[in-house]
Length: 166
Image (cartoon, rainbow, N blue to C red; front, side):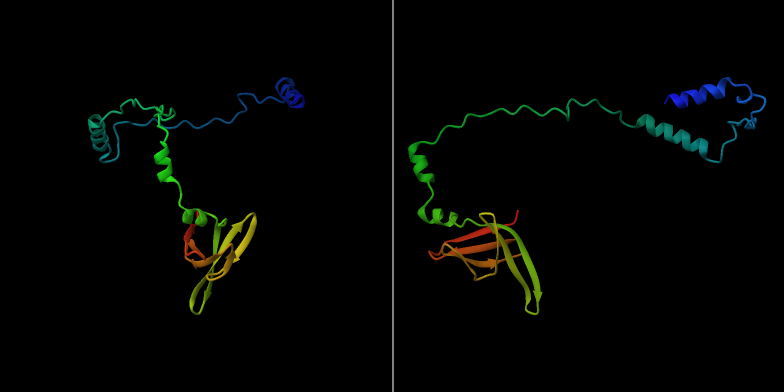
């Protein structure tokens, strides 16, 4: 940085290094433009544009601030009574359906002569499991069907459950 300042100072004050105004090349002067000589139709087009702009609606200041979120008003929700809780309690069959313990994380498709063959890619306690329709998954569960974006399971008690890709 200091070296650059030293070079600039040297070039400005040492005799013979500055370019004099007489040594500089002169830029040619541009001819004066006659404003009355315009291409055909330009004057009429400019007048029509001015008229259209005069009739155009003016922008209006908005009251809404897109950077401020509206204040959400919280509603008090009454707690369910004992009878309501008893009605909404899950049935025994529904509880066993939840016990699947598998997450569908993907579907692999292989093209065969009979059409596409799909394999479900499942996650069970951190372990990746590949399963095809009809394969037993443990705990009484079997992979019933694999579709394009979902897989359905059934257990020995006849309960069914479907997992869909996120």
